[in-house]
Length: 620
Image (cartoon, rainbow, N blue to C red; front, top):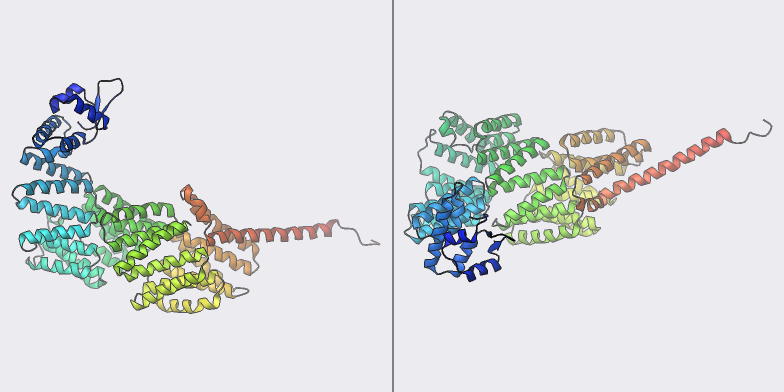
């Protein structure tokens, strides 16, 4: 009956004789609405449920719920979810359980994870109102799994411990889920301990899909801890064993992540082929296809294939959201945000980052909420909305300190450094970058040290402090050994060439070749936010060499890239985006050089005109 128009007579027929005063009350409160000039009523969604619960005695409540459900079931398009709101009040215990169970399954099939979770909680309450049995334990596992997919890791773990307390010891399915929770919480060693316990309950049988599944999960923990070759070897063994299984059994072992291990070993083509083969097998299963597309995106990302990576992550995210798998959707969103930032699509990235924050706020660990806050803050900073960026940064720093997550604290200091730089508070910015370096050194985190040094050099060069930049650049040079991050290698090269251009009154020709190579690499990877910086530096280089036409050409290219990036933003962000100091400087340099060039051309033109039309020398 929900969302259907019914007459008062029909309404009375299925709820019994309804008091006119009660009906008037329903209309006044908005629970039932009368259409103008018609003898038609529209019940609000769940209106009868709310009325039954709030205003009627238990016996009357049951009678009305029974009648409503009986009436709903007569519809040819009946779904269990239509009757689920009334299940709690039904007199028939078995019928209520069947309706809630079917409604939860319908919601899961439609990808409505939160709704399915709510229905399963109601089902558990109804089951345990009688005598708890094996069915209630199965429902608890379904609740735990959905909480995992929703990113509610602590609640998932608590439910699993409740199951263990009832059974006396965790069963195989519980150990598998506990391992997944620990992996989601980035605790691979703890996850492997659960998988080892699960494997100890099984014979080492390579023809058993469950055994192979657990071996693959164990391999993933090795990969997450950096033992890449060990992970690859175990993955190879399980992959070979899985190929020998029947098609039906192979479908039970979809979680082999050999491709990622191959990518980490630099074997990108083999990795892509591996995941394409998996898609041909499991592409019709949305949840599995989402996972495979996500892994394929990660391979493309490592290989530097930015557009292919973004396409794969986007498809994986769409499938994860369609199935209600927020647990998988969150890291996909983070990867999409990172790639969109590299392409300069900041407002699109912001929408995804805010969605990620919204999902994490539903129950993720504080450290993950802090990461999302930091991402949103970084995007606001890139868009030039400095006050908003500061608010989110302060919240991120509070959570990072409370969690004792020093790596995250270091990244927050880096972002504060760029915020203070934009505000013109140079010493505070330098203090932030030095704090990042100090945290990196105390935690032996080379990644933080590199970015802290990079920020300090960038700050010093932008303010003409060349000698002060040198010690940080030298420290960065040492830390670049063995760095496989292609984008950061380009950033390092850009700083090196920038210092060379600024130091030399008449920069040498070799610098142009290096800058041209960087331009080609950035264009290939669609890294627009680096490309305009390189074009700007090329303009400065040619200007210092008195090559004005070339200087103007590259400054115009730089400004065109910035304006194209701005055009792709939402209108509300364009002005603030263009006002960022470093971007505004490109327009200022272009205007200054253009005016100087025009004046020089005018002077030259004037001299030429004088020499052609001026007076003849006396006597000639």
